[in-house]
Length: 130
Ligand code: FES
Image (cartoon, rainbow, N blue to C red; front, side, top):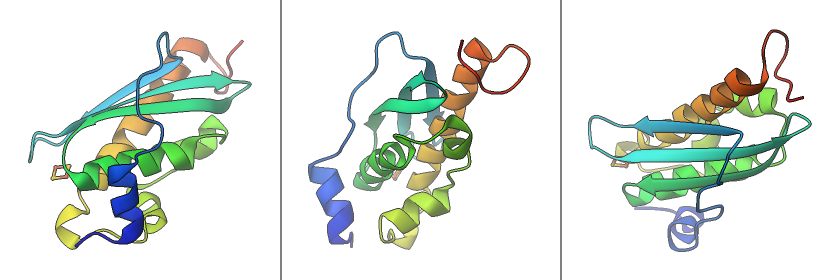
């Protein structure tokens, strides 16, 4: 059902946890299945230096959430904001069709975390932390 890459991330997920006093925090939930995800960010010079996740959900949600953090880490915030669920699924090498929706959590929580960061540090102009 899951490919090897997905199974590896389910068993050994990367970037699990929560950043205390995070620069950005985003929550997303799937009302359809009740699963939910929290992503926290540490940003320096507009680059995502660290990103962590905590998820309650299925294997697809664990792998998708972990891949979201892998894709976002080290990227400029504006670039990370453009990460889509399709990017996440492609980076995983695909998900079973009934698990595609699990990747939505990653995209939504990451976008919310970046918007939270922008709200905290971006008063008027670009996404800039002073
Ligand atoms: Fe709900 Fe996977 S079944 S996120």
